[in-house]
Length: 156
Image 1 (cartoon, rainbow, N blue to C red):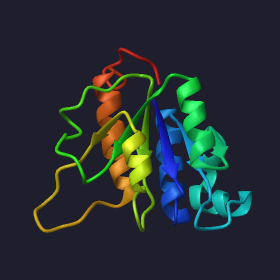
Image 2: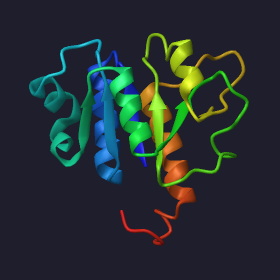
Image 3: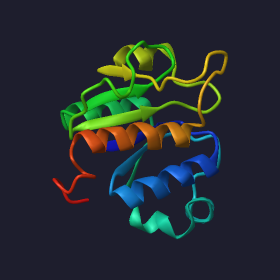
Image 4: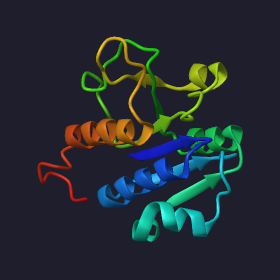
């Protein structure tokens, strides 16, 4: 299982997701362009000392990322508020890549139309969404739980 960040806007959120990914031994794909300079100094500051423990693959565009996902035969699962499928009702697979949109705009409609599945996290009525790094952690934890990572069935 992997996380994919579509054109992230906020380095601190990316740092939080890097820390989560490092602790859970999950790789991250970063789909550029980012809304901030993507350099080692800023990422090291945002991820603290967890950046080196996290596998990060940079993709220069959505097209190059999508080509890699299709070549690797990975399933692309979008976290979105525009679906009725609750994240806890979805059946995750080890080959899933969990795609998270930009903090400011999510993902464009052409990206939304390309994914293999969509999931949402139920939240209180009248509220828009969770922080992207929190949403990533919630859905990633559910996927790994379903796959037995927390029950000692599979080693992290």
